[in-house]
Image 1 (spheres, rainbow, N blue to C red):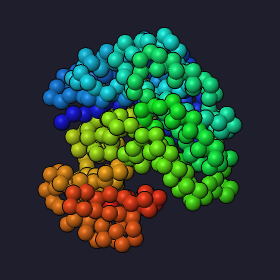
Image 2: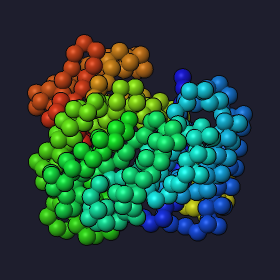
Image 3: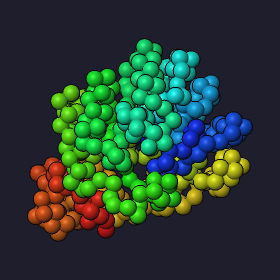
Length: 376
């Protein structure tokens, strides 16, 4: 069975006001120290994974494109040296407008990066400013065109709905601008107020930024407009042209093993979940030492794995395969979740046939509540 590799780059020019990811601005010296520590962590896996191939690599962040292009090249080269990587591996690099240039794109392409994920969020200048983004629409457009000119034929664009002051019309205008560029993939997420962020302090004690009805309307608009332009919704927040579904992220939803490298990176490996040290200084100090690096190691029980299979798998539009559930656990999905399935079907949140169980449109609208029902 194939596995995925995630590499976390926790640095950004400026932390956005809504962001609670493990990322922050840093000095160039910290960039260098971190790069060296990452190389040591990768090296520490030498001889550890010799029986399986990785068919996806994902540089996430933060803003991986903030690093020197040479370092990204060398990290990728080291990954190929230590792990067995398939020739057709999907290699994604997250980047933000304003951090790309011609030299970087040329070097990324030559190194083997074949998928870019660009964090736009909105095509409206007032919304970008409100979010605390460091770029403009025109900077995004320049970077996007430059990437196309350098031969990148698999590009994702991240967008956000539910931004304060965003209207149904302004969101539709953003969508229309993007689909005219024809990226292969779009990720469209609703804004969530995360505790501890400037946005939480600013808006949590006020009325809801957007009503549930308005939020549902935006999701309906997104699916309708993107479908008109040839994008299939294959996961709650993700849309792709045929054949361009994100191979790496799909691993998370179907529970295929992946190794997380870098500060705080999470892993699912041989029925265990764990994450790396989250303190930057400690990570740099112990990146080569599994015993000190890996934390919160949890051996998943059969019940844990079944629960995850359901609440992660139901994020996908095709839903959860009953046959694959049986092959994994040697018990029928219906035997474990008979009452839950009946309850969710009666309230119109779930449908099933002989092969699959999946969320209805109503189920998608209240997906978090539905998925909680499947925790054993």
